[in-house]
Each structure stands twice: as structure tokens, then as C-alpha cells.
Amino acid sequence: MSTAESNVDRLYETLRRMAADFAFKPDARINESALAAQLHASRTPIREALNRLVAEGFLTFRSGRGFFCRPLDPARVLDLYQARVAIECEAVRLACAHATTTQIEELRNWLDMIAPDYGPQTDVARMLELDEDFHRRLTALSGNAELIRLLDNLNDRIRYVRMIDLRRMQSGAVPQRDPVAAHRRILDSLASRNADAAASSMRKHIERRRDEVTEAVRAAYAQLYVPDA
Amino acid sequence: MSTAESNVDRLYETLRRMAADFAFKPDARINESALAAQLHASRTPIREALNRLVAEGFLTFRSGRGFFCRPLDPARVLDLYQARVAIECEAVRLACAHATTTQIEELRNWLDMIAPDYGPQTDVARMLELDEDFHRRLTALSGNAELIRLLDNLNDRIRYVRMIDLRRMQSGAVPQRDPVAAHRRILDSLASRNADAAASSMRKHIERRRDEVTEAVRAAYAQLYVPDA
DNA sequence: ACATGCAAGGCTGTATGCAATTTTGCATGC
DNA sequence: GCATGCAAAATTGCATACAGCCTTGCATGT
Image 1 (cartoon, protein in one colour):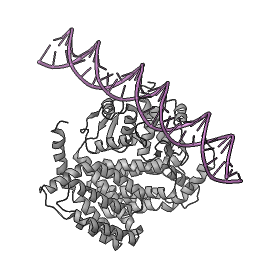
Image 2: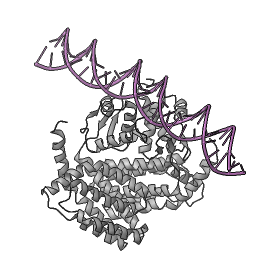
Image 3: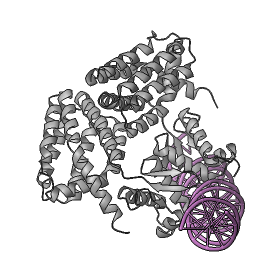
């Protein structure tokens, strides 16, 4: 075994990233042998990783025909966003009930700390990372490991489109809103233990992107099908 | 290849059922070779199926050590129920907005049709099936494929404990409530397009089982660890 | 009696080979 | 020109083999 720590884990992570970034074009067949050669591994571990990605919703599998990249379709993206609403609204409700005041203050401090980093001039990837991080930390305050798991999965599958959405926003196509403000509002409701208000803020915060993202998916279509890899 | 249609699919289904039913005891290591011999297959397809089950939350995997059955722990079961609340409440909200009146009436007719089957005298497995079916159909009215996917997965992972819970109810340990009544109440709110009321009914309906299920998990502990397989 | 190190066995990690199936390109007939 | 059938090539499905790690039980020393 080549690496002392874990060869297959990095293999899996690589494939996961490739799937998340649409390194495989939507609906395209995935050639196991080619992948194996490209990643300097054999087909067996590749197939294991691909099977996991199927279960996680990144790929599809047709018996006897192999693995395919998931389609990139606006309706699906909306579904994923709606699922985020479900998960995160309930998470913030639970956080209202269960999170300690100390935990909430820690999250507020974290938000204050990274706030300067979080402006229109920031690198898109960094901004996305910070945004996901906030939502993840907030969800973690629910104390519910399953909700965190589900959110992580959804974020992985949405990330590509969000990136495109953020690029459009930064390029000025859409009026830019202060992203930190919405987060502070949610935290305020959480601090005052107002579950309905917190959930409502969260819902609006996430749903607000819906139309933007629909647009972004159309842009993604163009970006995916035009440049030949 | 033995079966014309698909050998690995049935293999996967078998393992999935075994995992759902805790044919592997919680936290027990899963021996790939033994499984392969038992199911008349080789390790390769077994491992592929196990990897999928890891991604679906049925099993855990530790690099270099193999696959393990998920632990059966009350806190986790609560997490899963809470996730159901998140998914189903949002689903019924979406259904209020998007489902056609015809669809709602169809669901009500279905409920009327199966209502006679759905009493205290009914077989536990049948009752569970009907209950899951109702919730699934309701979630389907959201028109959101991702929410259905998530609910299916949660139900698969909760089913074992629900079964035990239902058995206790039927044996008279807990005062029996009419399960159809709660479903009708949710449908009524849905029919009148009252999203808040529908979500609220759904939340109460699911959360009501919480303490029962906590008890049921303790019973499951006993049932799992005493009889030697 | 208890801790520690070592060795053997078992199990996982993955490469590879082959059979079966699907795909594809071409030839043939309508 | 288009559909159809066939054969070759590519690809998947899976069994097997083997290398290396993890576990475990025993022996040895304190």
C-alpha cells in the first residue's frame, strides 16, 4: 500500500470532489477503467467509491450499464434548496431549545471575527466556505448529528451551483446584499429563544436565493456544455 | 451470472434488509468472507453493497478495520425522529402550496379505503406498512423528490425500532390511540391549505411517539443482546 | 499476578483476469 | 435514405489471489 495513512480515503475524496464539481458532465457515462488509470488505482476501489457516491446522490447507477453523473436540472436544485429549508429551520428550532447561551455567544463571536473577511471583495470560494461554515455551526447547535449529516450532504451537492451563483453576484449581475446581516438576525432570534422568528428568518434567508439559483443553473448549463474537457 | 436480471441488486437488497432488521448486532464487526460464503457470492459485490449501506447510514466503516453495524442508541433514534419532523413538516407545507385538490382527495380516498385494515387487531408489519405508506404519499404531494428520498432513508433506519414500538402498543403497554384520526386531521388542514396547521399537526403527530420510542429502544436493547444468533 | 512483547492467524485492501453483456459501427435489405 | 441485424470491440460483473495490517493469545520477564 502506497501511502501510510489511507490510500482509498483520498481516492474517495477525490472522486467526491470531482462529482461535486461536475468534473463528469451531467448524464455522462463514467468509464471505470479510464478513471482507474487516471487516478493510478485499480477498478475495485474506484467502484467502491462510486457506489458510495451513488448512495449519496452524486451519481446514478444503471445495472449492467455503469455509473453516470447526476443530471444538472433546475427542478432538482430547487428540491435540494427546499430540503435545506426543512433541515435548517428545524435545526434552528432545536437550537433554540437546546443550545446553551455560551454556545450561542461563541457562534456570535465567530461571526464577528470572520465578518471582515466576508465582503464583496472576498474570493468566491472563501465566501462560500464561510457561509457554509456558519450554517453548519448553527445546525450543530441543534445537537442532532443526523441533521448535520444531511446538511453536509446537501451542501456538497449544491456547492457547484452556489459557486456559480456567487460568481454572478460578484460580477454585479444581481444587487449584492450583506450576507452577514441575515446571519446576525437569525442569531438574535436564537439568542432570545424565539424559535418561530429564528425559523422564519432562516426560511427567508435560504428561499431568497431561489430565483437567483434558478438563473445560476441556466448559466451552469452553458458553462458545462460549451467548454470541451 | 446466475439470475438473468441482476444478481448484485438482490444481494444489495438482502444486505439492506439484514442491516435494517439488525441481523448484524449493533457495533458488531461484519465479516466479509463469512457474508460472502453465506450469500453465495464473492467479497467484491458484498463490499460494494456494504459501501452503499455506509453512505445510507446503516453501517459504519473504519479504515483498515472493516464494516460495523450501526450502534442502536436512544439518542440516535431521537435524532432520526427529529429529522422526520423536519422533512415531513416542510413536505406538508409544500404540499399545501403545490398539491392539486384532486391529489389531496385521492389521498383521502386511499385513507378511507385502508382505514378498516388499520386497527388494533391488525398485524404489526401491515400496520407499519400502512403508516409509512401514508406518510410517504403525503410527502410525495410536496412534489419534491429529494424529500421523498430522505424520508425513505429515515424510515428504513427507523423501521426496526418502530416495529418494536408497535408491538408494545399492541400488547397493551401503552394506551392505544386511533392512528387514522391524526392522519385525517393533517389531511383536513392540507385540504383547507392551512400550512401552519398542517405542519403543526404533523409535528405533534410525530413527536408524540418520542417517549414511547425511547422506551422501545430500551426494549430493543434487551431483545438484541439476549438471544444469541 | 500482572504487564509486555512477539508471533501466528485472520481479515482487509486491491490488483488482475475472465466471462457476460452492452454498445457501436458497418453492412445489408427495403 | 432509413431501418435492421450482426459481429467486433469495449465495458461491466464478479471471482480469486495475494500482500500487508490488525488482532489476539501465549510466553516471558519482572
